[in-house]
Image 1: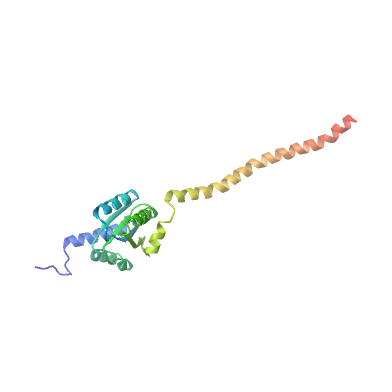
Image 2: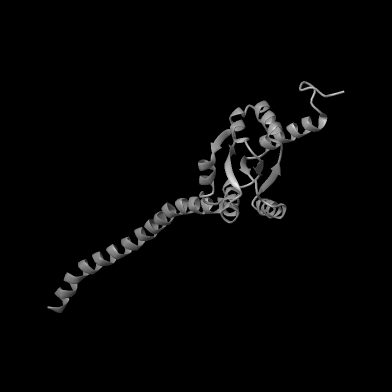
Length: 186
């Protein structure tokens, strides 16, 4: 007895559910075409992505289309052409995008197609731009520097007030004391 389109196999339903859960549970997903990469190269890419907070999985496009459609991400369907693998991001999006960019530089067979950040579908240019973003640590350092600079200036101003007051007072005492000293000497 053949299965119909209305009655999909449980294994396919499970994959669609898994893709839908991964899309919902990750901060971003970057879609790539991996045609021409050897298994060993894919394993190396998976290890690099895991270190950056990503997970690289290959699914059938038809099942990803169904999961995207059921999740209200129909715009993602246009990226599902050719052999597609998805890098699910569980950490820093820029770090994962940077790993993909750097890997693609040495392995031209890897092509970044676009992706999903939150619920927004992005094209390949926007996905490439993610790789140029500063890391989380760099952004935190910039914010800390931006907060610290005015505080440092304020502290210098507070330090200068009593110091300048002391200099002014010393100058006043010296100026007032000078005529009295001249009168004694005459």
